Image 1 (cartoon, rainbow, N blue to C red):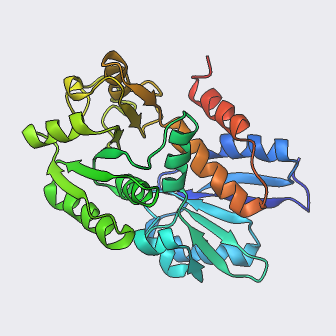
Image 2: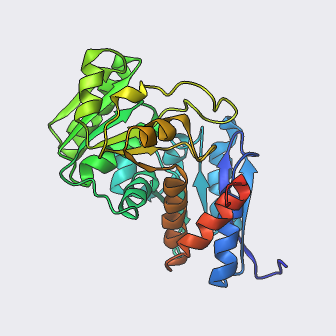
Length: 289
């Protein structure tokens, strides 16, 4: 039970009631023997500054940050790491012992770890990203930093794809980055030529799980790695199409678990129990069987 020594850590967003982070983190905190409690806080957009300042005022361990606050929180931080500087978004805030609020972005590194734990590497690989939103920006930057040979950013709105491509060229130094429409012959060739295909869109996310994948399954190839960042459901239409094509697959639970584990390591200074976090997440999803 919480007592007068219990410290708080949590996540802010709006909406936030759907978050599975409390289940995942509290399971890890129990195993680590930390007298902390992880809570979800609904924070409306106009009150982000108050929430961030409250971290210092209340002595919280720190915060995770989710939609729609990842960009807004940056203006209230004392400093931040290279990923936050490049992307302009933070998903983790740490209250340091000297009172500084330091921002990190663990989404990209979490993605890379989720791939590596399945025996794959990004270095030297051609990567095709589907979508150009915030997750795609983080993943694209992380892939470039991890040594991807090339990137193709495919999106319905080509201007948004070009924005992600330019960010990667300018901030990560990768020259071979293409922005393409997500439909058409160019898109098909880019997907077929990719070693790694990452679906960063919300197509197939609950409650609209039974839809067509964002690209035709016929574009996917045996031997490719196909990653879907959606974790609800775990077995998405994209991953089913990839399996039918003979590709290897990684579901979105891996990135969610690893980005959370990296955040917890920033807060605690200790390596978290990743498998405990994964089991708690899958239990919360009802997918542990």
